[in-house]
Length: 330
Ligand SMILES: Nc1ncnc2c1ncn2[C@@H]1O[C@H](COP(=O)(O)OP(=O)(O)OP(=O)(O)O)[C@@H](O)[C@H]1O
Ligand SMILES: O=P(O)(O)OC[C@H]1O[C@](O)(CO)[C@@H](O)[C@@H]1O
Image 1: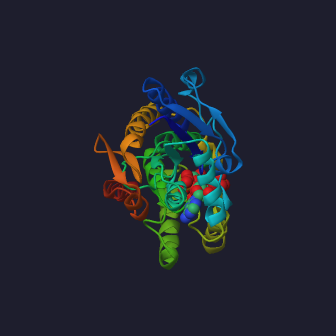
Image 2: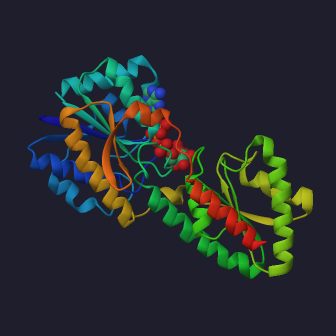
């Protein structure tokens, strides 16, 4: 293997730079050239790249975001876009493409199989942690740390005002962030896809109102609800209105939003990104259609189709701990 290409694609995640660094340094040691294409698949379509050198990547392990930039690329959903990407890879005599991103980015990568014969390797990086075959994705631990710290701050003002707060966290359509952050921040309630759906909204609402009324009355503290994005009709403001209309409960809304994607990666993400970056280079030499992951402490390779098709549920232990704590709070 002489040349690899790297892209970062989809939502950026803390630790993407650490993964780029590990890949480039591993390649350098093995005399493999690295081309970094900018803006996800757009850079491959527009032939926009940089030669990645050890000097360039050595100091980036602690930096959030991605030096290669990231993007979503609608052209990849069309055959023409896929062909353009394949042409660029062929033109530069690339032997393997390493995609650092989420499951959507991996689907895009697999679409290339019909037009390009190089090796395709995925490195899972998304704050959502919604990819199977790895216990954690790069960026998830940092996002959980950031959101937990933010809720710790909200907690102070919530307690001071004895106020109800609805804090919306990211996760697209999965509750890994909501459950981990909710538990770590001692949230009084967690509302996510795993414990609430369209059919059980009424039940969730009544339970929440009872909980809020008894706690505010008896304990004189704040009440923090962690709400998964895309769950409640009309979002956190919809829930705020529901609480007011149904029970006269006033609340404040805080959408943590993109704060969760930014910032320096925590040590856990830097280490995971480094381990997975090294493994990705090794996998790129002799395999294709694989994703690297870490399962039960072991670095491993998995069929990327399996990883993207499989659902990754929130750990049962987190559900149990939350239910246990909810009972103790009431
Ligand atoms: N089915 C698909 N076929 C071809 N390309 C795809 C497909 N799904 C996604 N892609 C490409 O991958 C890009 C990133 O996908 P997506 O927006 O789903 O983010 P992601 O990689 O899942 O990351 P995150 O969930 O963290 O934002 C898309 O903009 C598109 O270019
Ligand atoms: O940056 P965009 O396109 O607004 O995407 C936001 C989405 O990306 C993520 O941050 C990562 O997938 C999700 O949690 C969120 O729903």
